[in-house]
Length: 358
Image 1 (cartoon, rainbow, N blue to C red):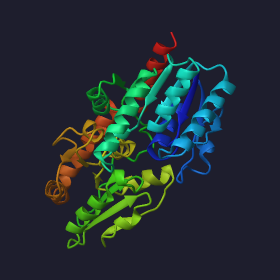
Image 2: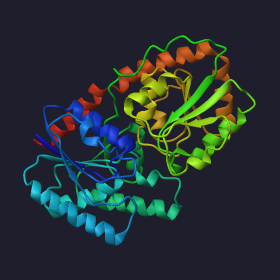
Image 3: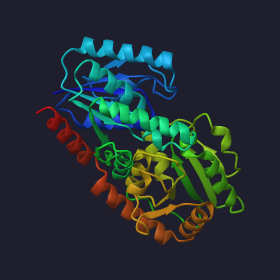
């Protein structure tokens, strides 16, 4: 079977997802049609297994009528040149819209899967009017054909709210590289509260900074952001360190040095960084949004919060109680093994591919 993956946001979590999926589904042929972003790894092809074909796609991130028409024609050209393929798997909202329209034009809309990895209409950094516009675009594209497969149950539920039928296959990762169990550390040592990701409005660095400021008087509590991005300047609190971009093996090491994983995200699909934290045996303190809520068993492996006061309360509780951190970390790892392992995700998508290819 030949799978054509089409992706605009070939970086960050979507990049990691494609890396895990294509390296996991080894019996199929994969072609990745991709855009580029500023944080797309320069040596990205070397991170994938041999035999995967990469085709560059001229596409931009933001909506721009003229540029998107050019991207649409370029995508149609690429699909025509590929000729024979069995399934088209679209990743992210821009690729999801242009890809479904292109496949409808080419009369191939019955073998299309779309995974948004955080639907655009969930964004909270845009106006209500723009969110409604995104909903309309999703509804139009859905009418063009294809099957919506969200990456979490909560994201699928959000699609269904707008009369877009959606199933889901939960994201999963290879748990093997992550350092677990965590080494026992001196209780008098510094407590590291960390997060992993691109510093963008979606990750809400303003709130991360406000939370860190609340703990500035406590010299034993440090905050760490693993990643980089345009909003780096928002992280100005004196107790925050920013690592810049890291290779995957370096992220694994950074997670092993954390004591608590904190997410301030405004919206998600199902964040791989949170699953990585679970694989590393970390207790979670996560903002309430789609995706995040799928990873938490409240009071078992962490907490969901709705306000600054609430997140402060949960962090104080975990900082003061190393036994609780350890217990929640064990539960995080157990849940990752049960719900978010790579084999479960691979089996889920293989089933979807076979259903469409019958």
